Image (cartoon, rainbow, N blue to C red; front, side, top):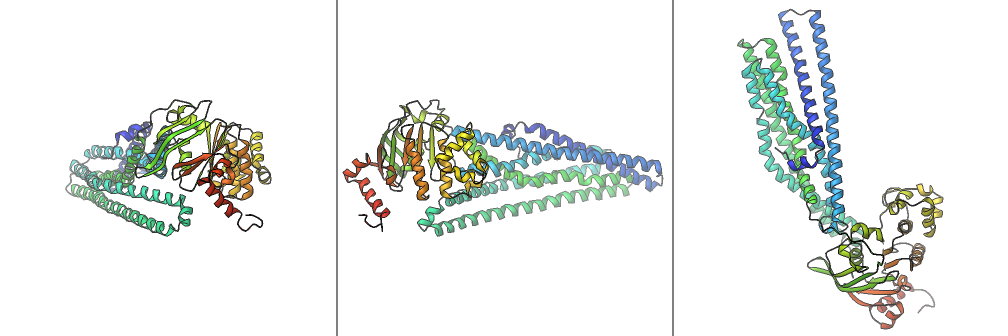
Length: 578
């Protein structure tokens, strides 16, 4: 019943903790039997009026020892549950992490990031209860009634037999509920991950939704998704409450039946008062372990549903191992490159481009033309392309993610900064960087003076560096990128949505990289690409034209039209400008 051999085999380290947990609970049960036997014996002596100071002292000593043993066993069993849970979290999260590394930077082609986050956090937490509480309780619930039956058979067989026969009614009830619960919890996790996907997508695209006034539509869509999740959650809670009520009736009803039978046996003279009292005192212990198992059942079922999601992730097909490294000649060449996120919408149509080593190349075009898609392909985030894409003559598909990410640096307009300090964020780009090197790049991006007025490299950052301005965030992201000293840099709208001063400072540093490494600049603002060696103009995923700034202006094509439009907008209202 809910024993997943693959799951248990995946977390082998937890087996010893589960076994120790069961043994300790069983030790606590034996101590409780000893305690109740001492109490029943004392009451029998009181009834027979044979009690004296020695008997009281002996009984008190036995009770004290048994209570200490129970306390120690309970405390150690709790610790074993904690150690088992700890092993589960560590093992499963490490396996998920290793799986994502093997899937590579293009993992999002097979699984949503929101789903990965959900199974790696809450999904694994649900399995904490499965290993830390449910599994030990499952085996203990099998062992405890048999132990009590063996003990009470020496007192009165009919009463012991009735109690034992009533115990299986609880697992039968659980089994009857399990089929329905499994389907219901499968739907619950489906709705949960769907809601998470929708929420993350809308949150990331909130600015775009506002611009196109589609936020109200998405708001309504999220409300509908949330309502579906609310309804399935209420069904789960209702199922849990009803099944717990049924198990309570069986558990306490069975215990009451055993007590009534013990009293009848005592009345008939088939058992003495001590035996009758022992049966009454231990009757509940027949059912409590199984009842406790039932209380863990629904959480464990939720964990099992989560484990299905975890194994779905762990079973995703992995790309063939890529062993090639980025060669010293890191020139980039695309030929007849075609890519689509889905079969119905092709993003790039036969795109060709050549970027020599050490050159300064720009990719421009209107929004939605495929510029950022090209950056994702170069960074290995999307692999399902057709045509040729090579780095130094080596197909990109054969280059390992490790080599690619150590040779290519990507800076976007929303480069993420983590909660921590400036130092910690910079060291993520170059773990071996010295303080002198960190201050040097901060000077380059003109952020050093501000940080000196704060706490220097130990200046605290909120999540996403929310306590910095937009320009300061981009400056810090640029500083982190400059620390890496990679042969190829890709700047994808790295200077958009920031103040003019910050944009000029960052563009100055980008231009300084020219000649030292290969620079690929993706920008919607054509004034930033004037000094590049070559400009590729994308129009709806197709290469419209390419050349230098002067050549493209003379062609009077797509680039020239974009340039004139932008110049008119930037110079609007300025006197003396035509």
